[in-house]
Picture 1 (cartoon, each protein chain N blue to C red):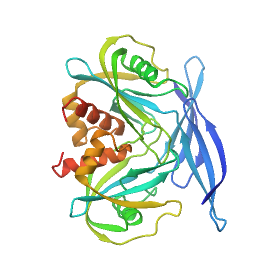
Picture 2 (picture 1 turned 180 degrees about the vertical axis):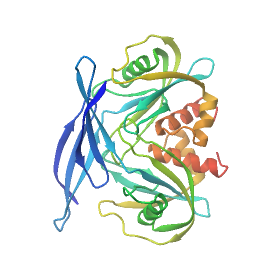
Picture 3 (picture 1 turned 30 degrees about the horizontal axis):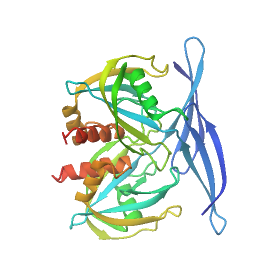
Picture 4 (picture 1 turned 30 degrees about the vertical axis):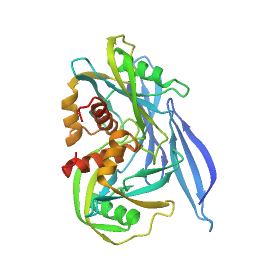
Length: 175
Length: 175
């Protein structure tokens, strides 16, 4: 199969959709789509008492309100650490004096170029920014050890949150 | 914000793109897109010697060849277990005599309605189906204990594979 056509069919505020036409040696054609994505940060904001600042928010594509680590899409040219601080302030109202990068992963590499970069955020202090106007976010404080049990046994259903909680717990010697 | 328009802008072989217009109380409008997705299966095919049938394949959206658990998109009306056996046969050339459902999770709930359903596949026997013509897949056998270490320390970068390996290891008493 060869790519014989490639076109951007939609440009949104944070991502773009590209559709390519593939043509086989005997002339059959098929289309495939892919999201061009600037990447996003995932944050594990840990308080000194062992609680994590989690969020509950309504996710429109699945029409459910779910428990997640704070996260957010990077601007196309935004610095990763600056993005991490901005999303932390918007979603939890805190800034981190310590940010530790704990790796990166792809949430949906068959569909989107999105890369998620995970940060452990510590030494938190209040420093809010306004939330995005299309977001309604509730902050929930839960012990990391409880979240680890929930990620482990299937009570957390968001992939980035399962990975983020596990990696944070491993980094801190809890898993 | 209210949804004041909703339209399907693209229908692909396995998913559809919907774009909605939101209008605020003071008349400002914004658009948001979401993928309508039929869901997919993720498989942890475990041989009796403790090795897992993994795959390496080129992922077009990220333009990289990566190590993953076998997985595949469900037909819109396909039974989940039938989908699991079909994808297992297409991608690894094996059928499972035992399929154990190990939960489900969303890979990208801000972008897509896709739900991933995870199965541990055991008692494997050869029973291949032809691969999808747009896929070139290499099967790799790796010990589950090694994969667990790789998922744990960040050497595996595919979210569904990190979650699937961890959950399989937990189910088998290895984590």
